Image (cartoon, rainbow, N blue to C red):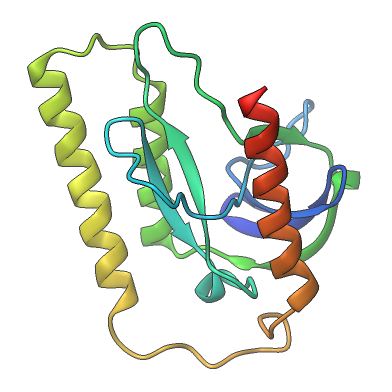
Amino acid sequence: MRRGEVWWAEFDERRPVVLLSGEDPSGFRAMQVVAPADTDISGWGIEVAVGVREGLSFDGVLRFALPTPGFTPCTWLTTLTREDLIERAGAVSAAKLSEIDDALRASEQRAERTPAAAARLSEIKDALRRRTQADGEGTEPAQTSESRSRPHDRRSMASQQQDHDLRLDR
C-alpha cells in the first residue's frame, strides 16, 4: 500500500480512493474519487481526472476546493486505516501524481483573493487542464481483469455523489 495507488475503501459503502501518503501511525491520507461536476467550478475548485487508466471501471475526479474567504469548502480528503482498504484497483502515473500534488498545494494555500492570486490560480488550473487533455490523447490501454466494467460500482458512484450533494444542500 503506497502513495499513488487507487483502492476501493469501505465507508458507508464501497468507494474508490487515491492514497496520498504512505502508512503512518494515524493511517493513510487519501482522497475519494467522485463524479465530475456537471457545472463550471472555475474559481471554486480544481478537478483531476482519475478513471479507467488508473484501474477504475468509470471516469471520476479528485476534487480540490480552492480557498475562498468566508467559504468553508467540502473536501473528500480523509484518513484511512489498512482495514478500511478492501481491494487495490490500480495506480496513478507519476505525471498524474504530480498533477494531484499541484492541485492539493493550490487548495491548501491561504492567500487572499487578489487579482494576482486569481491570475496565478487560473494559470495552475490551465496547466492542469492541459495535462489532463494530453493524458487523454493517444491510444487507450488494454483493459485488464481489474479494469473491466463493474456496473454496480458505476451506479454506486452516481448515487453516492447525489447523496453527498443532497447532504450539502441541507
